[in-house]
Amino acid sequence: MTQALLKETSQMIENDFLPFARPWISEEAIAEVVDCLRSGWVTTGPRVQKLEEMLASYCKTPHALTVSSATAGLFLALKSLNLQPDDEVITTPMTFVCTANVIVQAGGKPIFADIDEKTYNISIAEIEKAITSRTRAIIPVHFDGLPVDLDPLYVLAQKHNLRVIEDAAHAIGASYKRRSIGSFGDTQVFSFHPNKNMTTGEGGCVTTQDENMARSIVLNRFHGIDRVAWNRYGKSGSQHYDVVEPGYKFNMMDIQAALGIHQLKSLDAFIERRTELAKRYDEALEGWDQIFLPQRPCYDHKHAWHQFAIRINPEKAKMSRDDFIEEMKKHNIGAGLQFSAVHLYEFYKKTYGYKEGDFPVSEKVGQTIVSLPLFPSMSENDQERVIRTMQKIFGRS
Ligand SMILES: *Cc1c(COP(=O)(O)O)cnc(C)c1O
Image (cartoon, rainbow, N blue to C red):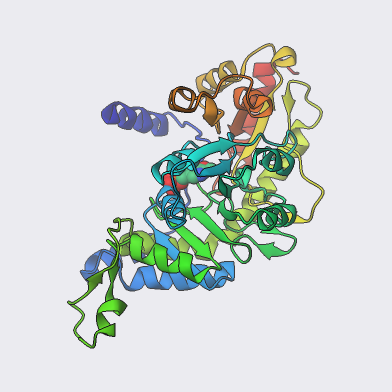
């Protein structure tokens, strides 16, 4: 499988294949990774500490805690809530499957609330309908970097005494009503996977306003080891520690942080470029009846433009979304499938009885959505090629 994937990837690069996402890694970042390797300290250390300080300052938050992935971060955040059997956590079906998987792993029951057809973000009204006496938390996803309408969401959460863990995998650099995602609210989880707006190879970060959440993440990302607890008993010496919980091993390495430090420095420029490209797509594709363009909500926000997702209108396009992806591939252009509705995966159907028709908006979007190539190093020529190819595929002259 991996071999086949590697072969396919190298062939794509050889054939001038335009992927839908590609990280931009500067020479400075490469040099820093090499310095890290030469330093002899490759795992969690000074570079992770520096990246955390930079992230805390960028997100304007007291706690920015790096982890090995956003999936690990979401899991640790949920784990700290100490879910009891039958406790429910509400999330969106329009997400990467890990958002729901971690609810199951942390001992909760995943409850879905359908999305808003305009923004593809979880609908606050649908969340309200899904709340029961067993609900403990909500995990909204800032879809493609478009912030969820957080003010009414937090009002609702406070009313029902619910925790909010924002899946901000797409949303570093985004802001809601002039406040950056991560700077307010409860807890946020960012992803630094190579497809995301900034990368550490694999990696993620949890930001939180809550001291107890921060302490739980720090303990549980590294074996439950508490050096402070040991010191409390008057012993010194860094080789001693106590273990206060059976923790996990979800720490980030300095090799990863070396890359992240430079990615974060470039993040605003990356987003600016993404925004320019998104605007060009908007202008070039406006009025095409074969597709629906992404729409913007009326509240004040800054979009991080993680992806530019269109929807195929199968009647007018005379093809399905999957046909469209195949056609693009024939023309050496990648198109991303983010995402299929999660409740229709076998595990969720079998375990919880979810079925087709449960969340009709997510299902419709999940069947028609496709992400066009969008990444900071994409040239105007690349983008012209995408648009011309789409013209050809749809038979537009
Ligand atoms: C990518 C992604 C994640 C997971 O991020 P990792 O760092 O790969 O674990 C979580 N949620 C959403 C919505 C994502 O797109």
